[in-house]
Image (cartoon, rainbow, N blue to C red; front, side):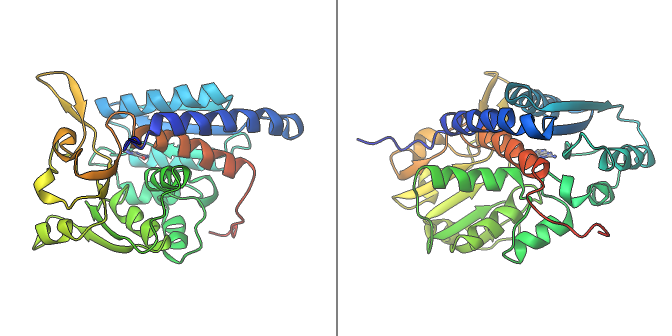
Length: 290
Ligand code: GUN
């Protein structure tokens, strides 16, 4: 029997190898590697883990990286000054500010201060707007990474009933836009949704990103569903990481599923590298007045 696992580890390694070769080649005539600046506020354990994974991958492909580890008491104005400097820095092609930010910082203002051409997270309203208008430029990493995973496994999702669980700016909303772009009939369910069960039973494809360990069970889904689990939840008792899906319970029901860990996480990192290379190669044109 063929495996039902959509292996993000395997596909991300393939992408990373390809980027490594590309960087080596481009470096010869551009005379510098792609550059990524990562800003993070030192108050969050999961941010620390994400940053470590991103930095390891950047080093593996030969990027130039700058890590800006800021105190949680930093003033918003000082972050804006740093971003302005990085926006004008020749050797930096991408700027990533790890979210969430402390509550005294206006996250939207900070995101909007990153120049759209260096917005490798794809969170700037300009980039989100382009995705919304079917003309994507830099695209949010997790949703784009999931689309790449489908492509690599030759999964045609056009026409499927897709249900996204969770409506966050980082995953749920841009995910819905990606699915729409690929021709899915797309539903987002969230905390105010009535008849959750009905929406899940109707879904051919479920993407879940809510941060609730083992939330989705076999009773909620129909046979043959494709499930993508974006959740990363630490179980203190066993010191293990689990997703938002009760993997054991749904496995016999699904046609495909992403594991946690080793599914979506590595694809997010690989996509960040792809976006940084796109910025480096000036793949997209932007109005400089934005
Ligand atoms: N926090 C959780 N996921 C992400 C992500 O993809 N990008 C940023 N900047 N912060 C995050």
